Amino acid sequence: MGYSETLMRQPLPQSLDPRRQAELGRELAGVLSLARMPRLAAVVVDAANTGDDYAAFELSFRRDASGRALVQGRVTGTLQLRCQRCNGVLELPVSSSSTLAVVRGLDEAAELPDAYEPLLSVEAEIDPAALVEDELLLAVPAVPRHPAGACEPPVQTAPAADRVDARPPHDNPFAVLEVLKRHH
Ligand SMILES: [Zn+2]
Image 1: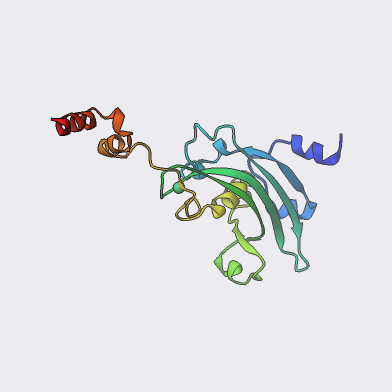
Image 2: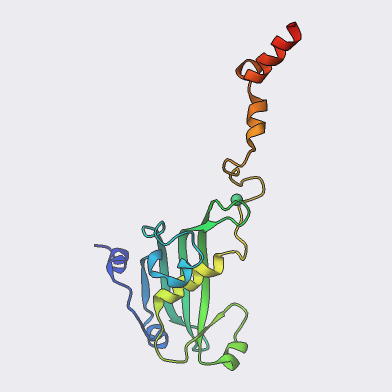
């Protein structure tokens, strides 16, 4: 069994200390069910439909040259969103990565180099699944929409009169009456 396979089989811990993990140079990788992400469930199409959807993640803990505890996260997956234009389902492939620096407060966050996103950790432990969820949530647009012209057609909203007009004349009994009238 390869090293990466071993990583894949580890269940993700409910909580861990990111500073301690950075000292250890720990790496976690695997897949998480989207159904386990309550905040994401509020923006995807339907928890019942996404029950089988998973996101793949890699979380790599390390220290930078200044001794900051970092979490490098990489998340890939596909989210099913509701298009705000046609109300159809919109598939959003997500492939996202970021470098988080563990900070205790906003002062510390303000001093971070631009390349880092702050990971506020007042208490020692964080929930690694929440990091994966955060990364996915960041990829969700404020107003999800299909690309222009790619929306699904509206469902059966054409008025009945249009459909009668579209028929060939011989299918229309009133057209036959018209013909009879003209002959008399
Ligand atoms: Zn649409």
